[in-house]
Length: 161
Ligand SMILES: [Zn+2]
Image (cartoon, rainbow, N blue to C red; front, top):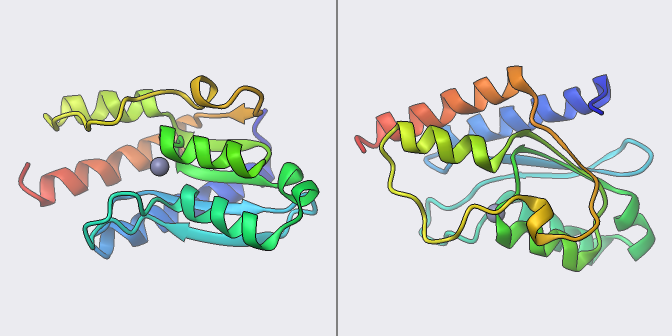
């Protein structure tokens, strides 16, 4: 179930995704929130430099591993504008983070990119549940997913693909 608090954090993720897009990165943003509701860390996609592992969910998983106890990690929530890719879902699972809430799903992204004529990536499009056995996952949120879709449309029309 998605609460008003969840929506607040998801809106921040979409803002971060737009920031990334404006910097020449891909439009993805994520926020790590403690069990007490404190925003612990946030990041956006940083692939413009050529390293396509620079995803925000991966960065937050590493931040959590370095800064939180296993107990704190298990009770923390990761909010994200787009569902974790398999790499980030695995990182989330390996470091023992808790719930995931996403604004738009990987399935939606794949549909949008197909509509935009973008060639699929080499990495398969798996849902989080296909990668992690036991994580609570909520999403997508229709209204915010439409905003994320618009960011991807801007990305691919700007690059002329
Ligand atoms: Zn990823």
